[in-house]
Structures are given as C-alpha cells and as structure tokens.
Length: 287
Image (cartoon, rainbow, N blue to C red; front, side, top):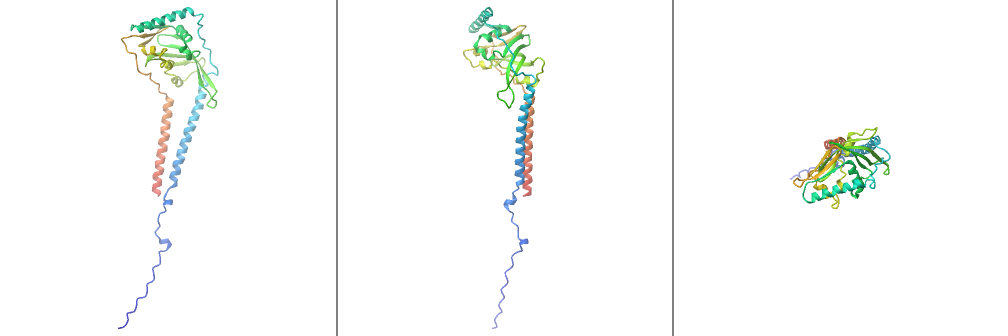
C-alpha cells in the first residue's frame, strides 16, 4: 500500500507583537502619589496657619494690654495697725461675737465697712496674698469699688517682662458654693479705656478661692455663710441656721474671642478633611 504522505510539521505561531501584548497594570504606577502630596501640603498649610494665628494673637493681645496697663505697680497702702488700734479692738470683738453666735446655732451677722475690710486684710495673715494688690474704697447698695494693682505677663518674647493693671474694679459681690466672689462690671483706669472683652477675663473675680481648703482659717466659716448683702457703706455677711448655704458654682462668662477662635479652628479642620477626601477620591479614579 502506498504510504500516506506525512503532514509537514506546522511552524509554531509567532508570539504576539510587542504592541499587541496585553498590558498588565503596574501596581507601582497604579498608585497616585498626587493625592498623598495634596494631603501633606494641606496638613502642613493648616498647621502653619494655626501656629501663625496663635503667635499673631499673642502679640496682638500684648499690644492691646499695653494701652491701659503700666510698667510699674501703683501703691496701695495698708492701714497702720498701731494708729488703728481702737478700730482693731472693735473688729476683733465683732468677729468673736459672730463666731460665738454661729457656734451656738443662732443667727450670726457680721457688718463690715470698707475701712474694716482693709484693716482685716492688713491684720490677718490669711489675707497676705491680697495685700498691696486689693483695697476696698467704697460700698454702695449695688456695687463694691476696689482699688487694684494686678501684675500681668508682658511681652511674649521676654519672660521677665511684666505689666501692671492699676485702677478701680467695680464689682457686684455674690455668695455661692461656699465662696465669696465678685462679678466684675467694669475696670476704671484713669485716662484709659479697658475693653469689655478684657474685663470678662476677670469675671468672676475669686480672691477667696485660695482660702476654701484652709480648715484652720476662714474656709469653714465661708462655707457656712447663707447670705451676703450690700447697703450704703457696708457689706453684711450672715449665717442663718435654718437656711442652707448656696452651693452652685459661679457662672463663667463666655468670651467672644474664644468662640471665634474655636469656629475658625473648626473651619480649618473641616476644610482639611474635605480637601483630603476630594484628593483621595480623585486619586482612586485615576488609578
């Protein structure tokens, strides 16, 4: 039988040209470095803005404070104890009567004039921190006028620089939380104007707060007080056994500049988050 001619070997197919090869995505190229760069730039810009705003605020505050403060304190003289010996004897007798009546669970009342308050500041060591910075000058039915000389931080660049707020603080005293504090209505500096926003920093003024923990001093007596009242020329403190001392804390005043700073910070954070999300989504679309 004739042999069946053998089929010639078919040549192997040539591989696809390089241009026709299926392109495999490069995972390195698939990443979008632009999105990460934008996020970093926005973050650094936001941080720089916040730091710059904080530094600018410090210097602006210092410039405003220098307009109504002085480089040296004003003299606030203390009453001379020797020349005021009769008045001191009368004050001690009033204090002793007050303590005795309160200790015997009877109504106790202490009526003090500006001179007697200043005499107590000069005589009793408990009030040493208030000396030469605090002096009551006048008491009316609605207000207490206090001469002050408060030391304040000066230049942000010099830790040894101080300014002094010398003037008269006009206040409305109140009793709350076992403490006598002062709601500040205004601060009068001769020939100068103190902004309301700065006055708010001092309200409520709480000079008695440091004495609350002193169990051997005036702290326990302050916690027993049930009322505080004003009349022309006098401040009266009372302990009424049948009444409960007010326990609420003084209300802190909200400051407009703090609110503005919080809102500004919130807007910056929201802008940063929105930009980061936009950049991330755009990067994913490109990949």
